[in-house]
Length: 114
Image 1 (cartoon, helix red, strand yellow):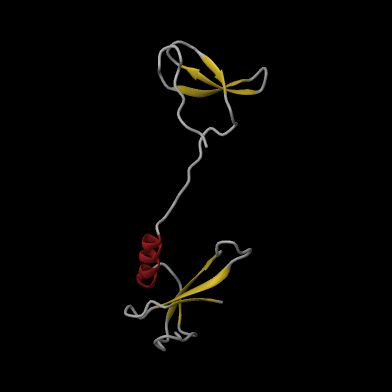
Image 2 (image 1 turned 60 degrees about the horizontal axis):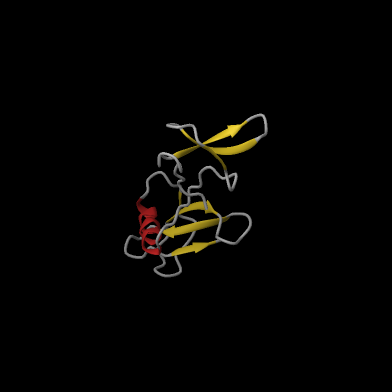
């Protein structure tokens, strides 16, 4: 994992640069021009982590989203409501995408996949 690096000479932040001649990634100080060879070729990594509570809250709001397509050709197995929103999504660890349905009965919110 990439972390901030600091100059050994003046303690300023080192920024990623490249040595085009040798095709090597460096970390360079903009203050004193100190250079260090990078340990890894990763310059930046953005990891997104969502809590289970946040993902559940987002899924609950799906039924109220007016931009999602709706269908009346399915019935909810929990409340027998005849309308659901649907969208394609890939489940974690699965290949390909599946059709996901969310019951439009706001007191139900049942979710299922086909």
